[in-house]
Image 1 (tube, rainbow, N blue to C red):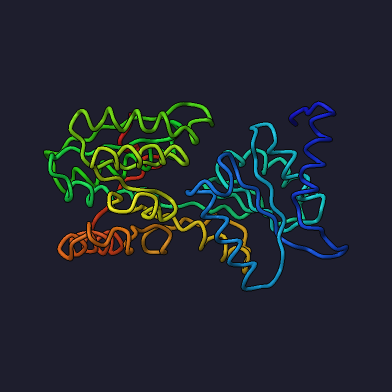
Image 2 (image 1 turned 45 degrees about the vertical axis):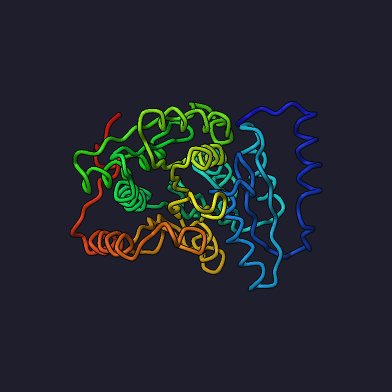
Length: 330
């Protein structure tokens, strides 16, 4: 168990009490714990936020919430929710997996959900996504849109999950154009890597200097710097997790959407224990087209990408998973 100084525990308790919707006795309501970057990160956390907000609007019921701002808060935050009687408690992000596992053992009758991680307990539902499939699609789209034959990738924290995005992206690029070049950089090795737009911009500019004209960012809030750099340089960028096409309209080629919002909404309507792994076939990942990028995606380009998508769903194209298939080892 993480040891908290008494003043920190008191401060956290008071802050959470102020942030949470009051709970009536004998009333069970869900809770969501957003991780580093916060619920308005325009990416992963915000997608979860949209899912729980949709549930709130359709059900007319409230929920509890808390935003992690320090790595040491996770166990305490999840336990406080369980003590208040919340169920299910949704932890957004792999970084909460060990904390959730600890608390889930303490509260065996409470339902928990971990997104992007696996906790093998009977009262936990684990939600995984086939990010490599969606990344393969936008990799193909990137190289088909490139004029230089060079594209790039900017990751957030250097962890296997982000390498999974990179691996899928590179496979899509190389399968579409074997002579293409792919440049890749990670932002860092700590949780601050998710919220460093300045560093994201620097990495993107360095990649552009090497000839990349399309960059895919899987870096949380850091991606904002990548997208701005692409806009300033007249290059194309690809968003991630949420549909980020609106952030820099006109230079956002697409976004590799990870439908955390849909998954959260479904979990709140029907919690079930075990592991769910959502890919293209399950509508768990996809690429985004809207009014902000419609002019960048010609009918011919869309037809090619949709054909690749259909082949992946049908099993004609096998996309290797960095975390499972010993692929793209870096």
